[in-house]
Image (tube, rainbow, N blue to C red):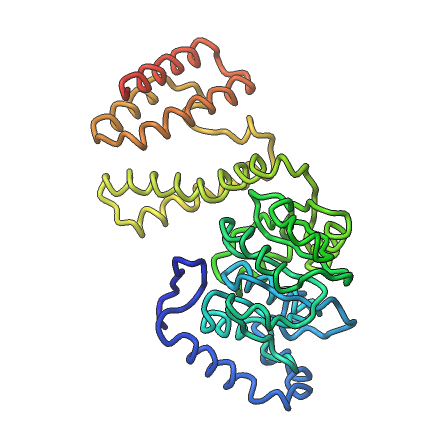
Length: 367
């Protein structure tokens, strides 16, 4: 199987020839849309999971009509959202990407059993967008405003009520203000989930929390989408979006960066990267369990929770001897935060003060 790749423009694929292979796989599994009824009747044997246990299965029955949707930005998140919404009965009419091939590839993942598959469009062909009730803009953050302005040019002044939602965590709905003159209510709907590929991502979106904000009709639609996906929504003020997203990045992306720094230390001990991951992942899993069941100060374990001065001194000396200035900076900064949690937990103040002095000295040595 060709390796998965993630292009610089935010589009998801499987390397060279992926489109033809994906199309071939879909055609082999679903031999013609004229067999739709037969396939659905036999879907328990075809599906990798039972219909009754997976509400996001692409083989799920369509119980009632839902809104028609255009997804602009056919990367990993956009494709995953399109697939998840299609499984819930929404009519995904088109996917738009910078390259037609990327849009066509994304369409293959949305709903192989659809009577009318989504249309694949390039950004430059957005004037061919079909009439829809909802626009989902899932481009990279830096392209959202430009995309909204282009969409506004295509729609023109209109009295038809439409809704446009973007999926950025850092930007508020105001970035799409140009669409309001086109009769659109605008909002944002950001899922707090890591999406690494559209198939697994569609499943993960089902139980996610979503941050929702914007015009009232748009937030109403966003909450309906979240409910239909089986998720949970909450609302913050538009001015707090960047702060909110910083928390999300620290929890997800920065955790990966921290894990990478830890695996580098084990590599200095002679372990391979794969061995380091296998060794550390169970430890990370046990920390997650602690966070899930205890308050934060109790979830903290290890050297700082115990106030172990001698061990901190050894850690700092080892990091300094390896000339790992970035990792030393991470250790000292997070160590200072850990001291706050240890204090809340009633650890001996004299030990914590001594550790704080050691960390301050290590910080000073880097300047």
